[in-house]
Image 1 (cartoon, helix red, strand yellow):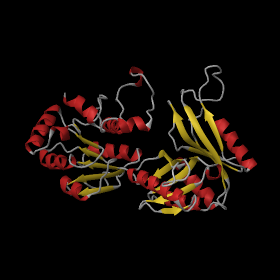
Image 2: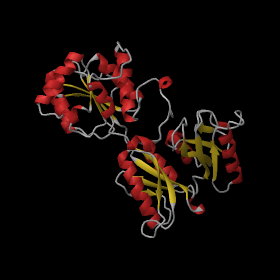
Image 3: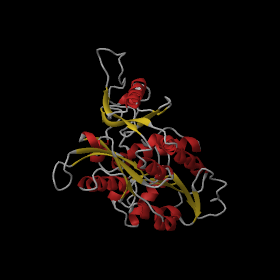
Image 4: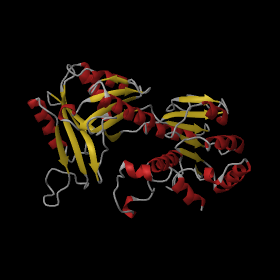
Length: 389
């Protein structure tokens, strides 16, 4: 749903009824994740995509049917058929479970209010019932960053409290997911399957070192949706004019800025100064923080000297295993722009537990389900171990 939040927000403001088709389950390899939506209004205008083109026509017609009938939500399953390769289905071989429902903003105004929070950039979780008692199917409860239910209700009791607790937890982690609830009298009287759409604040990319590589990396980071900060202690280099794609440019000693700024498990720390007086205190601090990625630029010789100095400062081997140094994947990059691609490719690989190898040289699903990512080792450990051997 969040992939089309801007349009849905506008349609709600205009009190325009629409049909909403949402991917609520994925099996195997599928092009787009759970939570992705398509919407169709009463004039036949469509927005969004759930399959990259494979089943869009069938979903569009199903949305039109739900709008015309004005009835209950419908479920549809799409997969690949070996018997008829031209049948409606996914050529990638995966399967999609899709919920299609009619939304009337005039009778369900809380959705528009929640979408207003989302498009304004306020952290919000929208919990959508995708399986359970028929009268609850498609109903939503929206939760703010402080964990309180803000709009919508299921029963005003146990169900709301159970859904709010789960949605608040997912909002804090910044993750969209489907959760199973209930079946007992203490938490929730019915078994519910709830898809929690999470609109969290943008993840942060902290780039230390106001160099040409930082300019290219800030542009790449902004393209990927990061809130980019460039920090350098030298005011002549750390200027907004040199880094137009950064959200902020800070003049400060890197370790001093990192000490006072906020980070989380989605934060990427990129150290491009390759100057020991900046790098060592900065990396010593970063390696003690719960950030998702820490990379440092430099030659092999710089890397070896950096490790020696960090060990002298008391940094442990387990901490050093989190460090991506030299920074980036081996793409043969030379220019700042190519190097930015190399660095962001490594960040993506670590966040998703990818191998960084060509897909032609590996087997198995292209798209890993989220549960496999969560059960794998801590992000960065596998790649870092390979580099340090």
